[in-house]
Amino acid sequence: MKKNFFEFTSAEKKYLQEINQSCDRNLSEYACKNSEAIQIKQPRYDIIRPAFSYDVDLILHSAFYNRYADKTQVFSFYRNDDLTRRALHVQFVSKIARTIGRALRLNLDLIEAIALGHDIGHTPFGHKGEYYLSECYQNGTKRDTGAVRFFNHNVHSVRIFRNILGANITLQTLSGILSHNGEKVYKEYAPSTLNSFEEFDKILENCYTDNDFHKKLRPNTLEGCVVRVSDMIAYAGKDRQDLFRAKLITKEKFQEVRLLGVKNSDIISNVVINIIKNSIGVPSLNMDEEVFKDLKDIIEENGHIIYSNEQLNEPYENVIKPLMGKLYERLLDDVKNRSYASPVFKHYLDVSLFQNCYRDREKWGKIIAEPNEIVTDFIASMTDDYFIDICKHLHIDDELLEKLQYREYFDN
Image: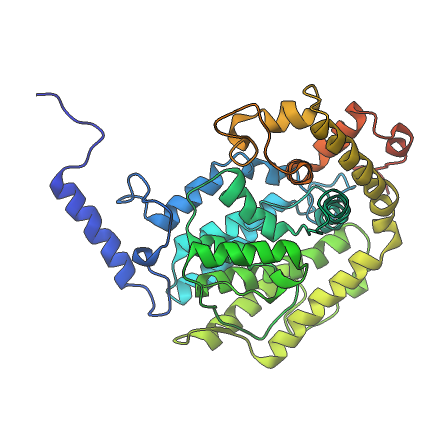
């Protein structure tokens, strides 16, 4: 009798089903149960990988996840292994969020999926790159279609999974990713009501036509709210620590005594503890007023230092911004003129993983996507190093590239 190595017996299936049901029973009444997952189709082997666990695998194994490692968090032009990269940031967010989620008996798989996927749509060169790419996209769409469209990294993260890859990601994970953009601190976080992909797609389209629409959104689960606040907790103390390591704030400033503490670890622990204390047995996340104000103050102070620092911003404004505009227009011409030797074809459009929303399925060679969409998607997918190398390869502006200087490991 031939032994079946890769199918479960009825007894094994019953055991696994009981495990999954037990997991759901142990969750809080306010948690999102695995049985409540909303998805396009049922994944294979969902008996060992419930829907949100399956989301985690899809995100981890996507072609875009690997690029986190070479995308800037805040400091793009520093050779310093101690400064945070985006890959490390998403891991911090995941760990902080799972710590809160475990204490509140929330769905840890859903939390991990949202956390690991939340920044996958980020551009090279952090938020500066995001602003510059959005300007290019706005100008290009207005000129070529008559209708202005905006780029935001959280919206693009969803586009990657929903449109570019066509991944079978749950509605709850996509909602958490779309609504994670927590640049503004709130004292209380409560989920929204969102129950269908049809409604979600309408919301997504509004994010492209109204630049501020995404800022009003809330995740449709408490798990998504946990990730949103954990995103801020993850960068509040870490940005401050990185500013000190980059010698952009003094030791005295770095060691100023605050309610939440001085060290990154203290800031994280204290905010996490306060949220848990105030959120046990209630359908929202909450902080004490004093804790909320100090976290808000730290984030605002960091932002002021980072975005008003001439030394930090000079290479972005004087090199990256003009390069972004010139590269955008060059690649746009390549798409419109069907320049098949261009990297936009060789490295992007002709890669089979990325063809879902770009080509006519009946006439495979025919590009059906609007050219500005293609170019924006391509540039957003780039790492910092790839962006510089493609500019060099295409001789976008050699004189401008020569002005770009990095703070090296042994510079004082």
